[in-house]
Amino acid sequence: MSNPYLETVNGHTFRMIFVEGGAFDMGSADDDPEASYSEKPRHRVKVSELFIGEFPVTQALWKAVMGDNPSRFEGDDRPVEMVLWDDSQDFIRRLNEATQATRSLGYHYRLPSEAEWEYAARGGKYHADGYKYAGSDRLKDVGWFDGNSDRETQPVGQKDANQLGLYDMSGNVWEWCEDDWHDNYKGAPTDGSAWIDTPERGTLRVARGGGWFLTARACRVAYRSHDGPDSRVSFLGFRLALALQLTGKPDGFH
Figure 1 (tube, rainbow, N blue to C red):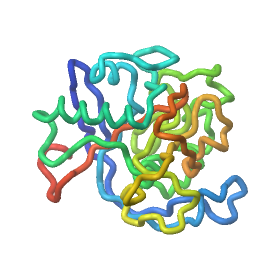
Figure 2: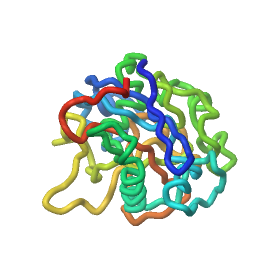
Figure 3: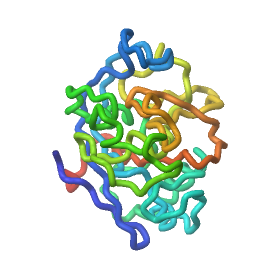
Figure 4: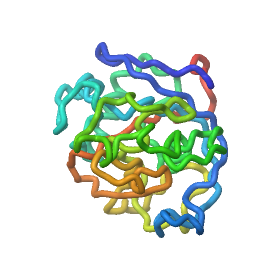
């Protein structure tokens, strides 16, 4: 596995994990008894290389960029929540501005696409293990859910990581993705890009990963949910992606 990328903004350092590009089967098989209609049809997707946040954005990182803390369950090492999808876009804009002098040429921060999120949660090129959750078939080993969370978020990184070294991708908080919500995968992109309606965006956005108040079924790597971009609740946060905006790969990342 390639070395992670460290970024420091206003004195706070966070880590982005390299995800090698590859292809995977996105969604659930027809014979999966836990699968819902929205997880089908299963389809082959090719994802380009990128970096994904080791953790969901923490309250410490949010405060370093935004200066406030909207979260219900306060703690610097806990995921930020009570964050609108639009708030995540504002955060990302400010983060890109603050790191303009330090980011390698051509890279920028953004939300992951739904395909990138699922590919990373499944372990990227190591996804052959086929785990139900992000890094294990036992959710209690890798995630916080209604069976162990004490009905609140928990500090990140306390459970086991998945095969890529990513934490908390199953449970703790839902994570916004860039995509508009679609009821199933019919017509979904196969190149790993975000599925965005044009000429006008859809009214809902995708959220992935499950959360502290949900059952194990909703924390599976294939499970999909959605909410309005103006939804501010204590179980919604986000995770950063860092990817090339232009063609060509600069030196210094891996």
